[in-house]
Figure (cartoon, rainbow, N blue to C red):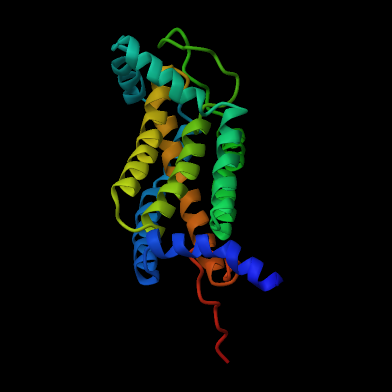
Length: 252
């Protein structure tokens, strides 16, 4: 009787697996392509961090911030404010927690663990901030929406959403079959990542180089999260209801 109850509970999840989850070879191929891209992008971070430790801002930082702030459209300003708001606490933490819970409920249990690891990029960013100690833009150079006391390099907002939204985009790209729904979700996640960086510059709370450093560090942490996810996929939760993997067989 107990076995029948478990089977009946997992049937809807198995149907979901068959209907929307891409075949295993396609998942592996997409995962490898995505990881190659993020590793290449992240290789530039160390150089930028070393320079940012000694230079308060670059001429291009000032040029870009003033160019972005020159536009005063009301709708644009509201969008920039709303996007930045998503990166502050507690909403950033709650959004990440919600994503983890949704994945777990859908039967993607190891994916939920990977999502939790991706969200830990914030802790890495905090450590880098303490090492680099770069000042944020000052009000005598650009318009500052609200002065923050923490170090400017890298942008915590951008770093967190590059890790979190990037991992969710990775899951959509590698797990789900091609559909308009997958395309819409991936486009929204990508737009959020890009707009987060623009919003931090628009509000005068980060320089362009702070944002670029966050994108680079974020992709590095994303690559590590994906590596851990792929390593554990064949070792843990191999019997999860959705997108299971064959257990890794040790070679004698």
